[in-house]
Length: 249
Length: 284
Image (cartoon, rainbow over all chains, first blue to last red; front, side):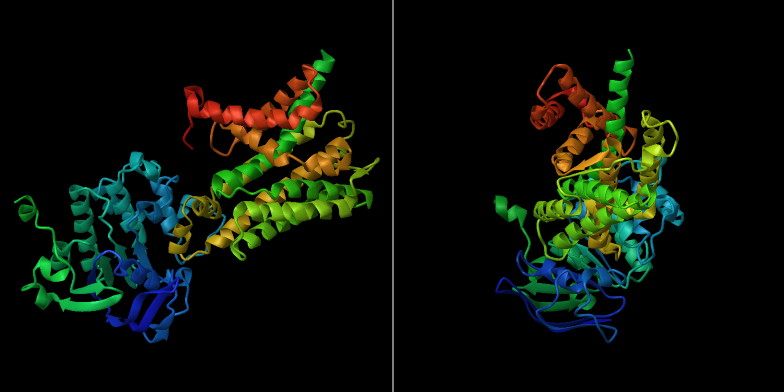
């Protein structure tokens, strides 16, 4: 369980997050929606430890982690970035990236770098058409955006984290790749009961997946919904949606 | 015929020594992607210390070990300035190189002759005029060791820190630690090159380290026409550079133009790489 008590973040004199008090329970799948500039990414930066709160306290199972940095929190928190560049090492091959991701929470040695390749994931990789020798020996930068995000997901969850954060993981993907990633991700998250936070701009997606929805506006969580509410909610109740038919009328 | 062989031998020997600096530049600019100017000072530090230690009767092997550590300390200083004081890459390197220039002067003055001290090149009797016999296996061994290291788990993290430091943070590793470690390795290597060079020529000159960075860079850029991975291409690039400089002697070009020729060579190589298919970048 992660608790935020009156947490604020001020950057260059501007308060980006304002007195946020909320709780993420174990097993929660919370979808965070909000307009641009609402503070969604800053919220993720604060949870991951990239930004330390200006005021307030963050508790992980009653342990104060407010002042732990990103590297220290990485042992329990995994984050999938919107930008595929941040999720892997572009110049290294897929196999090398997979081995690298398995260094998490382990001491590194002078053994061959590929030694920690996660062979137990081969079945999963084969199912996703990512397990062929050709793909495994391809540099990450030569894969499609969809393939990179799928691999990034696998790499981020190689050791199932206590909290998994997905920052608009499908934003740069075409609908087919986005669907493939979401299908895989949701199945994996449900099977492992991962405590998950997902940022999206897509209100339809927010209504379709997850157990809770938080609406972040102007640095504050202004609305919270759970699965019971989603039955009666519409996309426009969240952050609004584009009605393309009306647009063309 | 003999004189031609001696010229070629000299080119290869010098190329092999400078290839250590090329390996160092490869580590900083191609692996961790940190434009490190402190290698210029580290080369001089290696030379100055070698001259001082040999003239104080230290054995060359112990001196080489200590000098490599001293060079690593220069890399540590650059790394700390960058990671702790948040100085820009270039400024960190310039600060360290500037400081080392004074330190090197204090260590060995502007010139120091080794005299008849026993050096690396005396280990095989009678080999004094065939330094290539020692240099070639030694440099190849060094190349293999570094190549092996870069394929270890630590080496993978060096590659990762240059490409995506966030990846190390994601793994719970400190990206700064690996940046500093790579800078220490690179500067340790350059100091080693400086120390070997002083033994090769038999004296230390404070001016011998000036322009080392650009010489190493020229060697690196030339090497990339043969391959972009860490390997023998680095040796070939360094030797080729020495051959180009030697050719200018053949054309009676005043040696004072050497640095300008090197600078022009780098510009031409980069321009050719951008505009000619014969220099198409090879994938590692």
